[in-house]
Length: 358
Image (cartoon, rainbow, N blue to C red; front, top):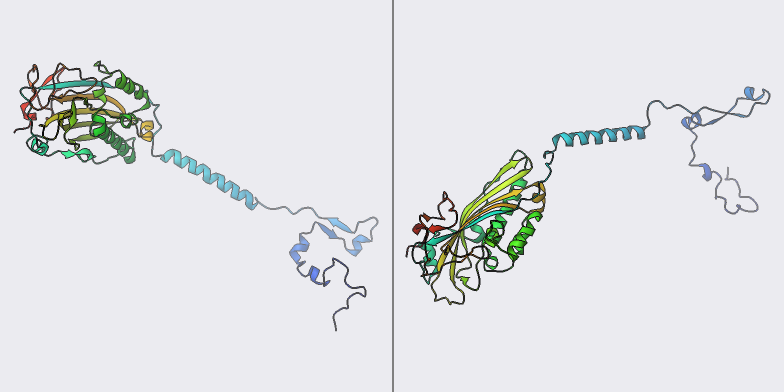
């Protein structure tokens, strides 16, 4: 048989080309029919009086929870379990409330020479004949110790404390620009914000009161009197980290720093001499300090010589240069190279063992 002919007037406008094609994608399978909300009555049911042609079926009851509800409950259970696990297994203890920064306590003790200060034109010769012969220059002389975690601080936190203390030692004692009277901002930014006001007061209004000496914060020479004969400053010492309490790390540093100096304005032919500074610093770090890479410097003990005991060490150290003598020297001698040296109260004598043997 042939296909049904088109209407005489043609296909109505907007109608699909084939009548069967319009319903070809619709399949009324058994599942679809059973799920229908309306169902036609049988012929016997329809002959009864006033019976509608179709009946409305009650909605099918679904047993159990829907798939979406199950997924939602599962997600909530996973999130709750994760929160409990992180609360139990979190690597850090409950933080202790940060205490306010303490003011720095400092002592700066000059060491006077027993005789004339040794000097030489060759700086290398001075170092070679001094206890600093084996010292290294700059930051290489401030190595870090092996890092070990503590009960309440991770390896990374202990390393951050050590690196910050190391950075402070380098910037405050080994930077030629800082020690010869230059900008001090690079040192200031490493301090806890609670100590920066005390630091600023020390720089602008220095005083030998145990709180506001410039030389308690950093090594400082008067550029009108002396200059560095060698920019490669020699140093040797140690850093150690330990946990003070559950919220505080402490780092102690002990370094002997040696400077080769000449008179300001003198040429290379002028004799140079060595100036030794022993610095013992104690830093404190809470968790906020570690996050900001800042330190609270709580104790600074400085012994420096050769210099006169009559000079005020608060604004600058006052080195005695090659051939100079101190007006008077108190006994006994103090050796800043010795690790068990007892800090004298006001002034000490620089031991002959601390001077170059020329």
